[in-house]
Length: 190
Ligand code: AMP
Image: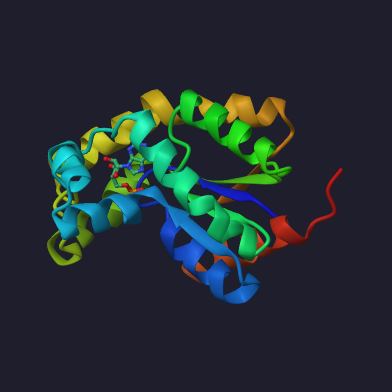
C-alpha cells in the first residue's frame, strides 16, 4: 500500500508516519528528513538547500523528485511506502504517479490531517525553543504555512478527483489521531 500523509507543517504527519512504520511495517519516505540529512552531512545538495529550508521555502521539484526516486526501491521491499511531506506541488504529485506507475504501483490512499492555521500556530508556539530545527521559528513557520496553503493545499482536489482522499481530524491527541488513521486504513474501499 502506498499512502500519502497530507497536511500543513506541524500537523503530526511525521509522528503518525513513525507509528505506522512500527505497527504496519511500512517504509517512511520523508523528503524533509532526507534534506535535513543532506544539510547535516554538508554535501553539495545540503549546501544548495540549506538556506531555502531555513527560511521555510520549498526546495525545487527536481531535487525532491530525485530523492524519492532513489528511495522507492526500499519501499518496494516493504510492499509500499508512507509519503510524508511529499508531494507538495502538483508537479511532484504527477511525477510520483508516473514513478509508481512505472513500477506497477499507485497511490492507494491520501490521508489529510485537518488542523486549522490558528490551532497550528498555537500548537507549535512552545515547540520553537526546544525543537532545534532552524526553520522552527515564527517567521519561517509563517512562510512554511503560506507555502502549504498556496502550493500544497491545491493538491487536495487532485486527489479528491481520483477518489483517494480521506480526511481525518488532526486536532486531537496523538492517540486519537492514530485511531482515526487506523480506521481510515482499515475501512473497506471501493
Ligand atoms: P518537512 O520536514 O516536511 O516540514 O520539510 C522541511 C523543509 O524541507 C520544508 O520546509 C522545505 O523547505 C523542504 N521540503 C521538504 N519536502 C519538500 C518537498 N516535497 N518539496 C519542496 N520542499 C520540501
